[in-house]
Image (cartoon, rainbow, N blue to C red):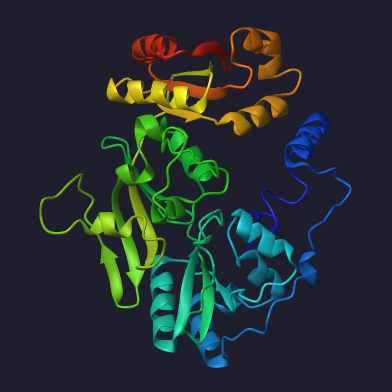
Length: 388
């Protein structure tokens, strides 16, 4: 596991990221009704208790013969770092200091063929397999459920991290599943292209993980969820490989591709993905709007969708999230630019923040924005300015 790793008990790399500003900490204490006198620091990794590995020597030897001894790990660090995702329940469990359900080993294949061999070897040995990509699941998808199996391993796909092919003419690209979205976009950017998929976990999310979870991102309103861009994929199962054709659509038989996308690793391990990609936007315009209530903002978005003028990015925060956004912005951010007095005078002091955005060619952005803005104003929205 030589790649960048997140802390096991939260988000981000150890020691990375800005500290929480004092005014933001004060806001959170006020909102949650706590005074901050009780602090529960996370345990040190070496103090986390995990049970003895249930992976027997015979099964381990078979796995090591496939991927190499150094890529089969059963030490505490490896097992803790692959024991859960990043939901609140996951993080609470990680911070408890005891992980009775930690995987028995972490296995890192270096190719699709090795991944397939591992899956089949585990099937024969009665060992459960949980695929691991970026580790950002918030729905329990990384829980190392043993069920009736003798043991459970985490199949770390981090070594499968290449862009295999870019077809500029067809605007498609083939990826290994373990490549993170920023790394994939960096390769594509050299050709003026992008995946255009930005979930909140963008920094850590992998291509394979996004496909396996049917991920959506901040621009999915305009550009669609990740499944709308999957052209083909390969998947390893205990019975062999499943490979779909890289065609836009087919009328022949069940849609196997759609069955595998979003399957969360329950049907097999995705080892290759072909996605449609698009040109990097030459123009971006992001704006903040306020509405007097969440319902009013939702009605405004409904009119945009029904009129077929929805922006590429549309995010409506409820009242609590809006208060948090303004508090985190601080004295030099959005709150200062809009002015609390102006919001109160117009009746938006307890309202909801909406962020909308358009991307593409400059003339296209202007053309699509105009009718949307008219409808936002008619729905009671207050324009609070644009982002950089």
